[in-house]
Length: 138
Image (cartoon, rainbow, N blue to C red; front, side, top):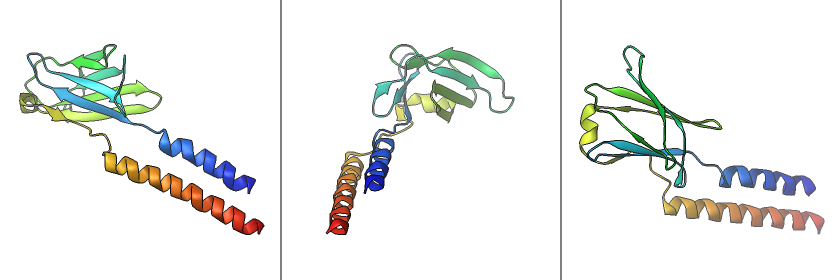
């Protein structure tokens, strides 16, 4: 029984507290993108590289600001953007010059429905695990 409780407690934090790296692209006078840890926590001072995908030359290197924002210079070719936010969080995407014409979300957060299903699944598994342990004792 101790094994099952220990296994359940170890599995719970890893699945419920895991988060990824998201990015939203905004097109205004000066295009910029905003980097964040899911769900919506700013990725401050993340390392950003803008790379020419054909020659692999680094066109621009910098960091996001305190709010996770990084301004993009004008460019006329396809570029690769690589973001490293530490602790293994990494995001790579490609931008075309015409993609700066309208707002675009590069990574969506999981839907509320998916979060509810995950939460109910965790609760149901905990309940079933407790039932199995109590039936074994009887």
